[in-house]
Length: 415
Image (cartoon, rainbow, N blue to C red; front, side, top):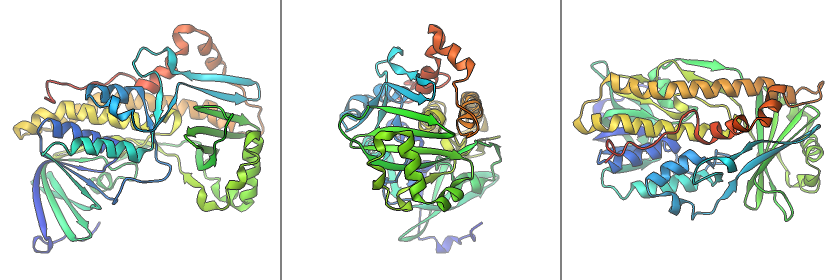
């Protein structure tokens, strides 16, 4: 734990209603909602900008519906993006389409792919129209301010020196490596996903398929996500095997990719060095408790999500909306009780638990099987039956699009 900073050493201190740590999807949406409700809110982001490589950039139908309720969906979709209406996976037994959004009852029957930095900047620009919103970039949190058994803000530093911000409520929305979560001493229940993912990019050419897809063969698995003029490629590997793959050399990776998707054979040469490849160490967990007096964590800070289904951003933003719905009124009157914080967890804990159980099932019954070089991969019988029954075949798409339940703005609380 960093050394305590004396009050005399802190050059600047200010007060706010809500201090949000972390400028990811959950943090910026929550800041926007509270600022619209007239609540003083300060958002602290550790980095100087939002540009990060291989961040999740999916905007699900549920998020688009929320943006529509804010009157922001139409201007958001004017930004450059691509749409995914269905995903097809090529297996040794043929092609299957496990997810088809076109049959869903929504104005937005697709996932929009947009660089996360552009989405975050769009939301920040919307929030900056409200005088109650303040953004501090390059702010790294060093400690929590605790008084009389409650969290009263955070200490942080910028290039200008040590700072502190005092708040009625502090919210940790700082992602899977959450500093707030660590400082608060929260305990997590972990699962053990069987895979990691190597992310890299290859050029996209005329005649290539659109949207997203996958390839499974010979104990190997490839994910393909359309990104305008490029493909974002995910090469799925058994957990902990990245060192062995590095030792085999970049040529082995190029060859494996070309064998899974022959049209990439002439493009894998674009991978010239390992620094073009990013390793995602897949983790999954959920905190036993998301709150302490004066403190709440949401998004990946509360529950690290597996990338299966790409629902992490979706669930983080739903957390933010529920937090705003529940906490706006208490923040307005200046009294946030433990019962209020517990209510946020109560509403979001079960949907998170349920989707993580489904992710674990998919990881064990599909992905682990797909990565076994000694077995010829086949779609599980349960899945084959599900795809044939009309009222069940859309269930995967509904769960990915909306989660266990749709989340909407409480306009009375957020007015």
